[in-house]
Image 1 (cartoon, rainbow, N blue to C red):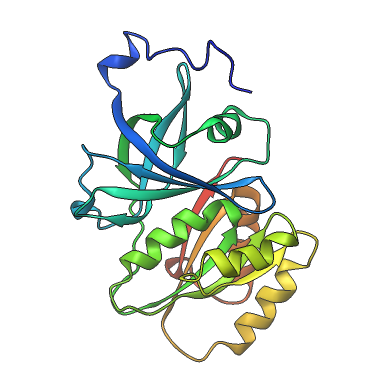
Image 2 (tube, rainbow, N blue to C red; image 1 turned 45 degrees about the vertical axis):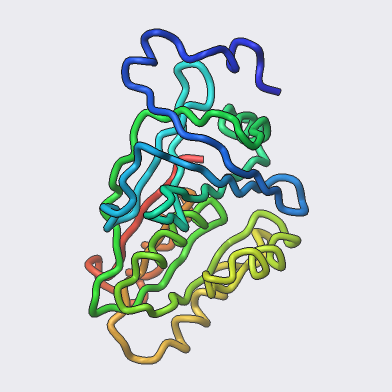
Length: 231
């Protein structure tokens, strides 16, 4: 649980740079360990988001975690965060404590500088922590092409939930007890000849090994955009 110290009001020092939004809704997947959090961010400027962004959320006193705003609406200044709450870190304890109408404190919203190019077809490869990242990339896609790719989910039960709850991401879900690289190899063999860009995101170990695998298959560094998360 979040302790009374962690839930204490924002300190005077933090208040110098902190910004505030509002939690509109919290939805939990059936397994009880993955969360969708709808936010209202009145000071944000989503109309200017032409690359993936990261919002640096205050999860405890002087402790901050990065998440990716996704499914944003420029007119209402709302967005959704997709957060894994299945661990025991401060970020997970924080998301498990959130309730509608809670204040959302954050330090900044910064550009990650990843966006699909006009003349390429995106392929998304990553794990469940990258749902927000890939959702943002899909929203930014200039040619409207739905990306293909693979999503490594935390549990076998998440495969069905991912397909049901993230219909805008037409990715093949693979659980951690399956051989991801077998699926990736089969997918690469079936790709028609097009100009592809691979977007890799998620656990840094998975991202590094996927980049190595793609390079061994003959894809060039310029075709591979990677964003590793330390989790």
